[in-house]
Image (cartoon, rainbow, N blue to C red):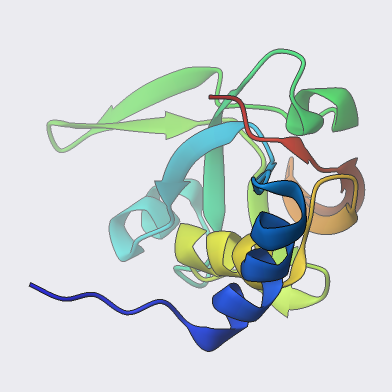
Length: 138
């Protein structure tokens, strides 16, 4: 079995590991789901893009910035869908197609204490929210 670590990740993390003995990963404090074609249809979206925030962890960067998690569910054709939460459509001007886009951006570019601009869709309107990244809890 083998695995690979992207060189960008190594270049970012290894110097901190050497100098400080540890690396603190940045954290937003949300959970949710990617917008797939079925979810886009339920929400009345033109494209299946973005990440629906379902839960916002109390006292997290997302909590402090006022992100809103899903507050209700609906059933369509026997399947439940969370609705009502913010949909993250971009981070720092980079389109978000799914959660991986957010996580890769955090891993490659961001560190604890950095600001990150989120473009969100809330109540059918696009707005921007700035969050300050904190250390990911254990």
